[in-house]
Image (tube, rainbow, N blue to C red; front, side):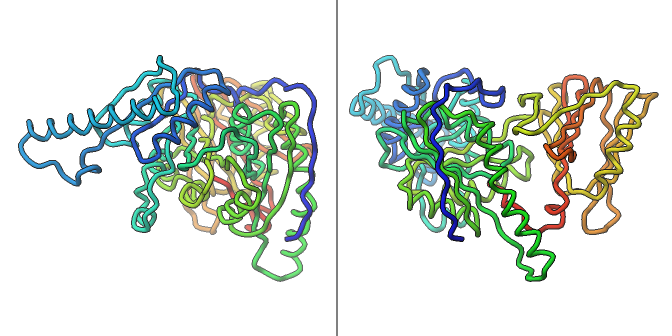
Length: 446
């Protein structure tokens, strides 16, 4: 595709960010100890300075990763681990002196599995960012998915900045993978405080046209192309860019990870930004195909931002042009019947969050069979099914529902059904009909 990129310069004051974009309150957690220690420390200085946050340096020693095995009995193995830890502490203190780290920076060392320990430490500290090296890139490690940074991203709940051995003095050029989802918007919001004054932000949308050459699919693909300028406008309106930031929007066709890496290299990006969709066990194992491939192929720093938990999201619509209508309990039965008729057969994403039960769950790819309200028990029943025509059903009963609202886009089409219940929320998003058909869809930049 040979589209000319569109450039817009924004000079308006920074607009209030939504609840989704508020960073965690804790320090910048810097994971030192690998061959990238100096670069990681420099990146920590840069990010902490931009955010005006404290820095906590941590290092996790995995003796089995260092030595392959620890010989001897229990006492000698502990002595070997202690020796490795002490050598690590000495080396990191030296690197901290070299990069000019402030004297008040703390250093904590632990022995254990690196990704698991880093995720736990980040959670305990309520870290705003976790900074670490991009890690080793041997072919076998790529094949087995054993890269430390990829395994860490699978488990952590805060944004992760993975840096190469050469770190830019400031972040002047950023490339953001955009699929117009809430996850992409949240990732872009999270990136903004890290940018230098006068930075350039490239918003890159990658999609894959249909492989079928018939007239119907060609028409759908062309309709999708025509809608892209409006989608970009809505996304940029919701992004609320700081003053003196230049934003460029561009579109590529093909595999998202490959196009993102090529684009970042061609535009000499200092930072490549991707969102990570989903927090379910299956999606944690996959990390998100695009994020994983970007981490393993990038030559610049990479920011991976996990999708915000459902309970942490703003209650107002995500993108400009959407409206949200709440209904009285007496209307629920009729409104859910109408919602079911309008959206039966459409592909869905079902997200559930409950602080006292399961923190977050996500089901995607099922089609909507129907939603109904049981007045006697105050339960909402959601029935989904497989899109391939099989009879398998997925039924969810939502108890103690206290509020019900429907989100619609600027054309009046349903976007999502939101339920508040007890200590949690449920969001049932419906995919546009042409996307449900499997053609002309944006590749998910997860």
